Length: 367
Ligand code: UD1
Image (cartoon, rainbow, N blue to C red; front, top):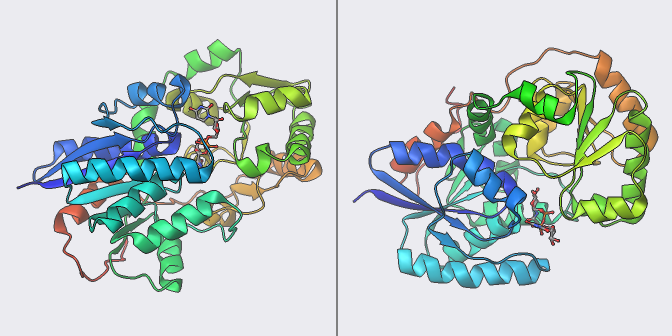
């Protein structure tokens, strides 16, 4: 019997991560896969657009959970996932990243005695005020197989006593980025928005810590306003962020646009003078596309991008944002490979097929 996997997704970054893995599973002997969509993200631009651009297979189950408080959302997912897992009896449940869907996928499976594989394991911001930090810590402690993007993440797990089942495999987002870049017509995207390469900034803000605190959001907008004196700032707004920014008033030079799909976002990142973001996943994509990044947070899980000098932490301080962008525009440090070689999906499937409970960890980098 082939190994039966079910992968749970619900939010944008998970769609991007799972696309290359779904393709790899479909292409390999001895393993089957299907998707369960929790429905955490449900707007067309937040979900369907990603499924069609990334050529993701239709989910076998759509749980339709939607938005709500964390407890309500996660609880509804748990109830639905119990039902699906019991009906489907998968050998392994695969869960990505750090969202509420990630946590629910792992918790329900672990309680039913199903093997849990966590992709993007071992990341830490060390900030327990972030819901994502709680989600990833708990998920790592429930998982049997832990796929880390690099050695720093594996070291974090060792620090928490987790060594069994840990594998360094790189980052699926790099596989996905390579695939997407082959489909992108960057010039058409720039033309659509009336932009010239290297003469605009690309910004995203969606994290609760930034959007739910009016003063903090206002402070970030002041920072963007300063930056926009040089070049326009293109800001695709998450549905949570859009009304809050509108409430504050949109400063001159900032161009609020609808949320964009992966292909359009990557084209805009590739040709931006710099990217300003509070997203986790985007920081890596910006790095791989060799665009300087300014992160609108006080800490990052992607510490390597900061260490090599391509990412700067500016939090929500307007002066710090302005200075970080100015320095980023002139500084071009060496650009070492980070987080694997773009073949992470293959390494993950190799290890899924070879998995036996109680195996020793294999932490050497496969590339
Ligand atoms: C979630 C993840 C975050 C990830 C992000 C990517 C958690 C705790 N957070 O954050 O780690 O970086 O996805 O985008 O899981 N909304 C809509 N339409 C949608 C989706 C959301 O209008 O399709 C609005 C709702 O008002 C909702 C709010 O956005 O309450 C927040 O959505 P939610 O999924 O809870 O968190 P994200 O901020 O998207």
